[in-house]
Length: 196
Image (cartoon, rainbow, N blue to C red; front, side, top):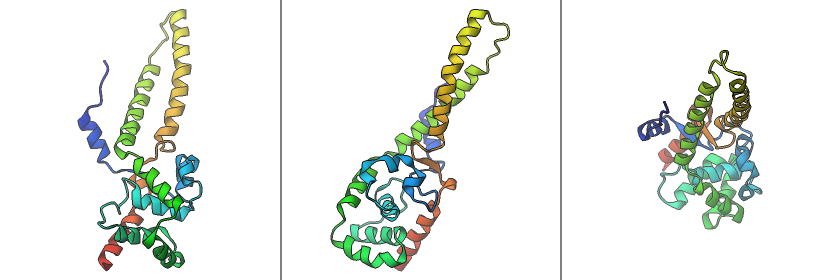
């Protein structure tokens, strides 16, 4: 019997704290998510520029709800850049954003958290389904059935290996909040808002 993941389940899973491209390490987003490293939109951006782009434009950013472009830029600068760079970035970004940063923001805005969480959940379901297929006892099968099973198993193993990599978040940018450093962004946002 084939079970279908319902919309309610997808919504419940999406509300469990999945985040998109949230920082995982101090090494930078391009290290944490190879997809970002490989995207030419981010090729000339430093790890601090990438944090700024993420904070300004990602659906998971805690800064997304800050009204006014100047306030939002300032909060994101406070979060993304080391203390010694903040004043200069504030002066520069107040009037114009560098082309590379603009390009990065435009690209980051295109990513869909909902679509990627959906992909993530469906990949987990595919993995579970393949595992149940492989767990069938074939000890009483005919030679032809065993041969067919082995062919299916070989294909299934390749799919499982690919799905494992993607489920681990390396390909789709999805992580559970607890596996990221998003709390740091929230703390900076809170401090910034208290100062205003």
